[in-house]
Image (tube, rainbow, N blue to C red; front, side, top):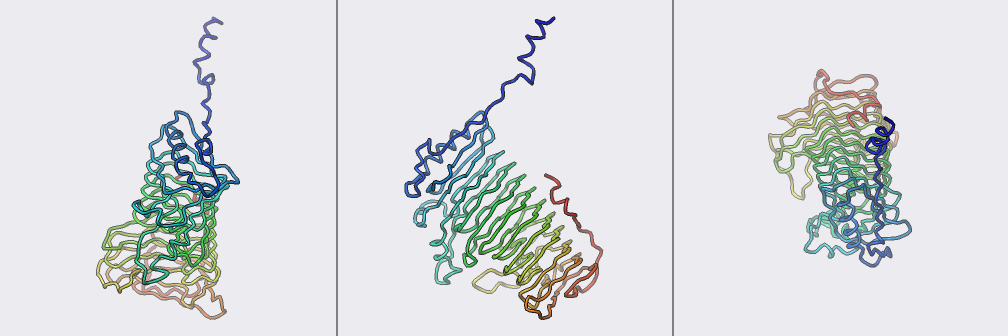
Length: 414
């Protein structure tokens, strides 16, 4: 009997050997890390080995070194979980001509990868100054052309990004497209207030995204959420300078878009051009619904609360159109601070598709200069609760059917 038990031991779950993580340093693949020589091939070869590994694999970018990396694609699917640990610095080429013949919208492009983690105390530097100087938003005589997003995650599932810093991206710092189950925490994104289109985080056609404990100081939206995205949780974010936190723009070019089930909880916005914004183009279709902004503190913010269904980011005037993206079930709870503009609340809604079921509770937005503030409403329907200053200007009341989330709910569904 004893012999039989001993013979079974190697086959029991507790006795199975544990597979160790394969560690791959990019310098093992020829990376110099001097900031001058091209290390792209070393990164590409390290990724091929890691992605093909049957065990967990970790690519390490060592500290105290700068790795010059040209536009590169990190493609999946991978056989096992992959971690990219950035301890050093990754820098982009300075000259936009490097992208000649390549996709000008991509620099570091991850696609089709599941169970990916990007982490570390290092820096990703887009060195975007030449790109910015060529932008039509800096000089109207320049052609309006694309510039690279520093990191794109496309068709990725169960993705984690934490503790890294991104600076001076050519355009958007990080974009998530067609991705699912994402957790972002402890990251920093920094670019000058004058840098054009340098959004911090851009979420498109993605679901179950959790962003928390991060600092975003850029030249455009700190976080932008566009169609078709849902179940977005944003918590404990410091934003500014920049354009605030935006849903949209939605419906450009008469397109259909939807964003729903979004909670922004605990945010500090300072010296931003907008605060909490929903923006849609005339002629679009779809909806923005079940969106809650709560526990937000603002300092010297222009347009702290704004819904704009007449958004027009165009060099020529936009035509008036009947169709619109429907905006409804939007809540603002415990929004306090100071406004840089007299009009601290603005609801400019569509004649054909009025904003419905808007809700204000404990909103106090005072003037940064000590003057009175005001609210503006056009085709906006809703109700209020508690102290609301400036007073709401809703055309009528409506039963609230949206969501009022407590601070703990920001982590639900993950």
